[in-house]
Length: 214
Ligand code: ADP
Ligand code: NI
Image 1 (spheres, helix red, strand yellow):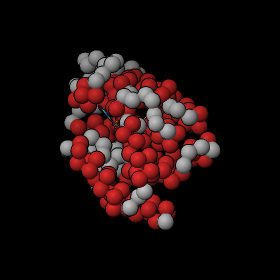
Image 2 (cartoon, protein in one colour):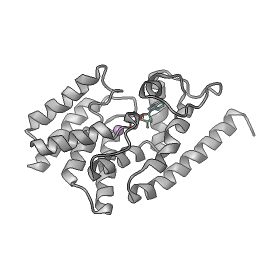
Image 3 (cartoon, helix red, strand yellow):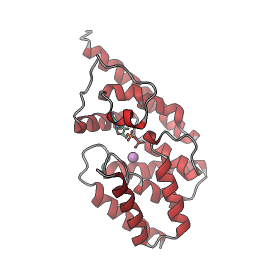
């Protein structure tokens, strides 16, 4: 029964995000699901069904992927209704998805399942994949790859984070390099170390080539 729900959800999410070109495609979702289940297994904590469902559905109501935010939440609620998911599971999954995003700025998470799915989503924002996703997203938004004249923004409201003038390289300083310290579980922190160092090395090389230091 639970496996059927997961399989159906997998097909649904695949159809919804298959053609995304902003780094929030189906393969991102699949990696987050795998990372989250791996973390749960290592930590020996969390309800695997809730974790897998929340990981699969976490970007369905994302404000970046829906012109109208409410429409995204309606889609998510509608899907869980169609599945005839029980109320407790629905509530747990909604609470996770509502709280885990970086842009929500929320620090206190409602459950260990939320901590694990957030860690998985954040790990996929780091390392080689994280770099690729950032330039893909920046290109899709039409923002410059890098603009040395722009300041690095420290404290931003959600609106400023989303709409302020920035560049993809700025996004490393404004978010990606901060993620390692914000992770919840020690399993994720261990995985993050290599990904963080990789980004630091990448930026060093980027600035070297940008400045034509030979
Ligand atoms: P969350 O889904 O946790 O709220 P975001 O929506 O901020 O996180 O970002 C998800 C991914 O989209 C980031 O990891 C990054 O790759 C990309 N992204 C978001 N905002 C920007 C930006 N301003 N410039 C470049 N990439 C961005
Ligand atoms: Ni995501």
